[in-house]
Image (cartoon, rainbow, N blue to C red; front, side, top):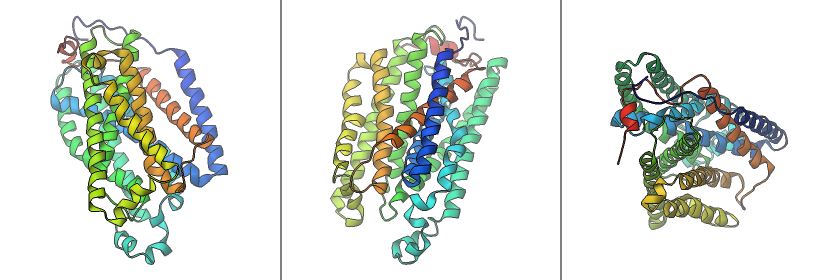
Amino acid sequence: MNSSVEYTKKQLPKKLSQVGIALLILGLVLSVAAYILEPVRSAFNNAIMLMFLSSIGVGSLFFVALEYLGGAVWSTPFRRISEFLAAVLLILPIVVLPLLFNLHDLFHWTHLDVVESDKILSGKSGYLNASFFIIRTVAFYAIWILFFVLITRNSYKQDLSGDQKLTAKNIKLSAIFMPLFAITVTFSAIDWLMSLEPHWFSTIFGVYYFSGTVLAGLAAVTFIVVVLNENGYLAKGIIKDHYYSLGALLFAFTNFWAYIAFSQFLLIWYANLPEETVWFLQRWEGSWIAVSLALLLIRFLIPYFGLLSQPSKMNPKRLKTISIVILFAHFLDLYWLIMPTYSRDGFVFGWIEIGFLILTVGLLITVFILRSKNTNMIAIGDPKLKRGLNFRM
């Protein structure tokens, strides 16, 4: 352990584990029942859950890789939280499995008779076909899981050995991961989100999903760091200066998401091409307009004004509240992207949607607890830890 670093590992409350398992079981029961009663609607909700969990997992891994590449020290005392959250990537193959058996219900381009009679879909069939789609999905998850295993394995080894060479190895791995992250996240968004409406396209859509992904991962990390630190589960020395850095990043990526979202809308509105504008018009008709307005409020206005001042970025209560708002907003954003394909006349919300939401929360809690059970909450072997705890703005 780094000298002068006060840290004693404490197990998370047993009650939290019980809550996680209870939510997991309840969500699983509701989701299975939903698939039996309404398989098509369930598949769309499953897609929302998949993309949300993907965001938390790969967004957290991005944050880990960014620390190594940037040589940051302020985030080292709680980098392990990001590593635990990134473990969600390990369960993505299970979450995606039901969807691979329901591609025909989700995607218009899987209907061969429709493709043959549609010139646009015929032209895209070389990319949009079930076999290549599954291959890409498997490849994306394999890449994410591979780098997660390699980077976290070195981090855990360092707890025992304190070997600084392991940091150098992770810097190299992070340098390789970053371009692969950009490519895989972009094409994952194109495959699972944009291709739901195969006649529509946006060249900025991958960046749109990237901004939401990083923001969601960062919000999850921020919420957990503040809660754990308040209850004495992290090393002594994490102060409001660390909170400010997290708050500043949340504020920055909130603005970045808004900029990308507005840019996408503005370019399509200005071009006024029917094949592009129809996507937005669909989300501005019927009851979908309420979801669109709610998204603007929850996704941008509340986090923006909630984190605008410097003191708010350092306020633990404010950070916890805004983090929850951002996570809910990301889930709502994915709902807004996916569900209009299922229900064009207006939004639908009931026990099926609640069931998949419960399952999502249960999975996140359970995975985090399992990963933290036999591993230190902080990277005690990292040579940057002491400097990270002494970080001051």
